[in-house]
Image 1: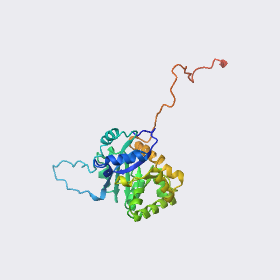
Image 2: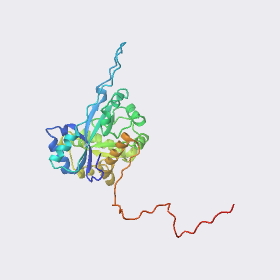
Image 3: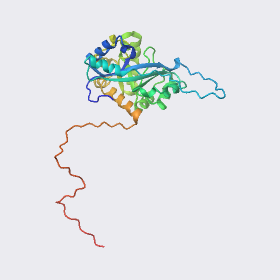
Length: 293
């Protein structure tokens, strides 16, 4: 469960390769020193790379059991233990799954996997317009993203954007793509301006999507990129603070129910103070008159 009193920044997309045993120490120290306190380890699965093969069932054979096509989430307990050893305090680790798909036909195998519910955050990247329409109508997830390697060719409009916002989706902009390649940078700027045109940049989150600690940047540098992406100062700040927190809240609601309630003690209660109930009669109130029958 995330620490809601945490005042640090969020990075909900740190690639699992950044946290392999050989490099996890330097990655964790980099994230902590830059001020990130909530980190999601991202595992990417390309659904269309593993098409479903249907076998004809022979008489007398048992029914096929759903194969676990999804990998196990990363072991966050190891990261928590490492954080204690490094004296890295107040850091929350989460598991994130990103599904890239072009058709809903192969997607149901992954949604039925026993490992699917083990992930804290679910992100989707549609590569075709039918996949985007399926997300709008039938798929419950938390984050929607697009591959900045290619220019957006999907049929996105104001109505679709509004539908996704109403469903609780947040739109992800990965700033490491702008660092690595000029083509990705142009596509990312084009995508962010489309978000501004269609939905006034509502529900935007910034994340690194870093595959190396060298591509992780300070939150203050990231908010400065917001002006380039068509966001104002408040929207840029919310993209790494308020909106990622809403992503986690929506993810908890998706897993456990739509009603999410946080209970917190704000003031210590004085046990010696008498408790007055609403049902107690006021002694100063005049007695009620009896009605005549």
